[in-house]
Image (cartoon, rainbow, N blue to C red; front, side, top):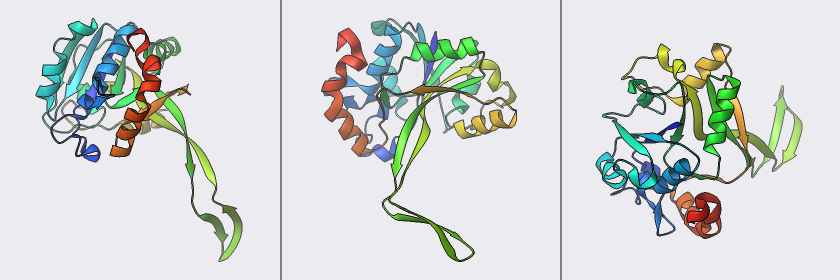
Length: 237
């Protein structure tokens, strides 16, 4: 099994933590970086190789990870000279297997990555997306109006949505229609798949998931890490 980890972003929303470190290398629990946790998880779940798509401060990631030997992985690198979006970096990767995992390098989760990839393969899917239920609470009274009249009212309602976790499984053939070197976002890929009548597979997940995008998220990750360590790192935790 092969995984591509997207680790090229500037982490602007997480400043000042990312002023001198790329976001995947910020420490969690004063002992591990986010990326180290992810690499350990992938190795423990049977992945043999990883490609790291790097850009901003990528030399620090190369220095930290090296060839991946200490995790029992084969690690190579795909440098990104300019931002290419979520999917764009994949277009120049020539030696990807038929089906592979893609994930952001800034998430903490106990998702079974291998199970996602196995489910994707078994379904013969073009694209599979790990999804998570989010509840959004509205702090106002919500009105529905028609022709100048209020027809419905709800006081501080909440809505449930399924959101992308930033973890996907792809079939390599999905990328053939796109031009290497040009930006390509995940949103564009999903919309193209829907337009082609090839709706992505929903891999619904109900465990722990945290996208470390803002300082509040980072503080929460550190506050929760001791309790989550066994779930995230298994026997190593």
